[in-house]
Image (cartoon, rainbow over all chains, first blue to last red; front, side, top):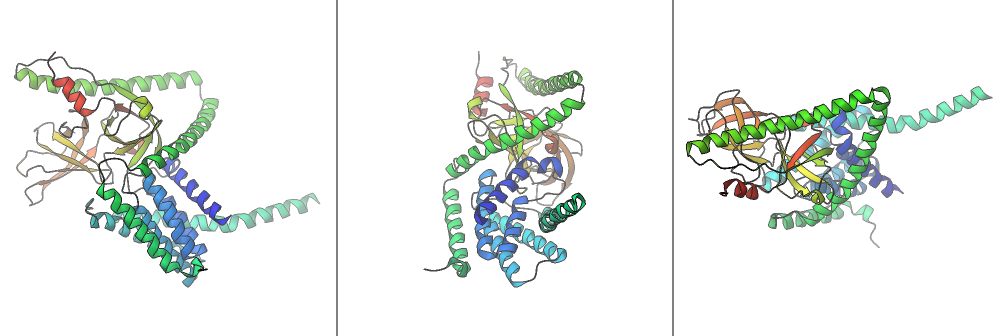
Length: 169
Length: 280
């Protein structure tokens, strides 16, 4: 059930990334929703689930982009593993640590991705740090909001239903 | 039996090795589109098409309900016509430029128009690290790899992965994109390269070349993909770099954030050149 949920989350993130994201953020702040899902799953489920999620999500994203298949997969695998280790070794339950985790994961992902392309001599990057930085902030904001929403919304729904039932009685 | 949950390190090494093998296999054979990429893209393009159609349907129903339908449809038709006329204008401008050169050589020849097909953008790239879009026309409509994609304002990119009913287009602003370019005023030639952001870099232009801010940059046609004479953008920054080549940044004429409809030039570049060069 958990694996199906993760696959569904990746598919939804890919769909949103390719359809809705361009209307909402208009690429002013680049956001990698798939990376947000990988980090979220890794932090909440541990390194094994994190790296497997990173592998699946990265390969799917590679297959849909114009890069070499496996580069993004490798970057997301390592980031998923590291985020999972961080999630098991540190308490990442408050917004600020989560924000830091998303920023660090995005920067690590950017360094791995761009580093691999430079290492393989496929492309040179003059100054990608501004873009990586803005993506890190964008991912962190979306990730923290998603974390809060997933935690708060079910409880809020239950409280609203209980309140409604009391009024009816 | 080994519980993999307690062997995360081994699993990481195995998965990383798998990726390295996968990457190595592609780098050894980069001539064509990898099968995995083509199949995955073809399948996901259908999902994108469905979601895009659903979104378009919902938007259409909502706006159709509150807008005056007749005015809206007239407006759409006029915008489409305007886009066609703008493309026509660019085509004529390209033809005029070419004709002037030919007139000088006293070799006036008939020009054949390039067949194009209109396509709607149905999805953006799957990752912000690569600038691609998906269009709703594919191999069934005659699209092939490396066909040029243009818009009324100028050059958009090239087809990289055509599936049956959709195609992935690499935008000119993608880090891996490049095209032969020339500066219209001084005819200085170079290579326009994407940077992954909203500007392009014009490379291999000599420091002695006459380049000024605001100069129009157009396709030179030497790359064999983009037709000659289409607008790429205008020079934003032109300065000496001390390397023998100027540092030139170009602002694209096309607004890649608001791309909705494009034209794909159906004839491969080789065929276009052959048609244009062959005597009647």
